[in-house]
Amino acid sequence: MSIDQRQFEQLSEMGIKLWQRRETPESANTAKLNKETYQVTNLTTLVKNQCFNDILRAFDLTIAEITQQADHLDLGLINWYFIDSIDDKEDEDQITYLNNKLVTPTINLISQSHKLKKLLWQTISQQL
Image (tube, rainbow, N blue to C red; front, top):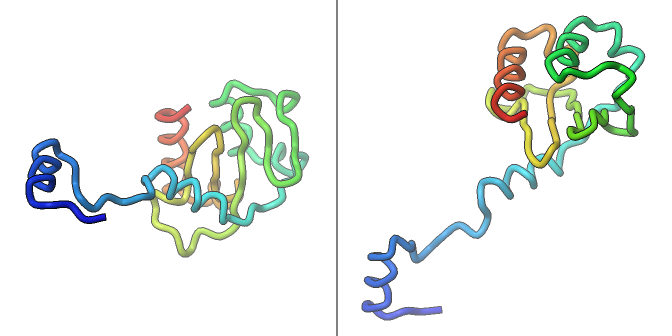
């Protein structure tokens, strides 16, 4: 589609850029989340982890309120997915929350990293 100079100036005055990204950052995050391969979790193993129990307390949940699905944990309003690898990700991309879908590294990786713990607590307090 081509436009003339007058149309271009009018669009510019209204703050409309001629070339705009078709994909919004939110849809890019959704696409990125959908490409992940999720780690299968075992709820009985997670219950033994102190970090997991602390996170449940932050959500104000008990073990009885959690349902284990094939590739995630159903916390009611939140579906929690785990990824196994964090090597190729930026710090801010390691823990994401979008459309009631929380994606984090495994509990073992979180409990071993102060940076990941901090990022998870920030995500919980800001998003949830």
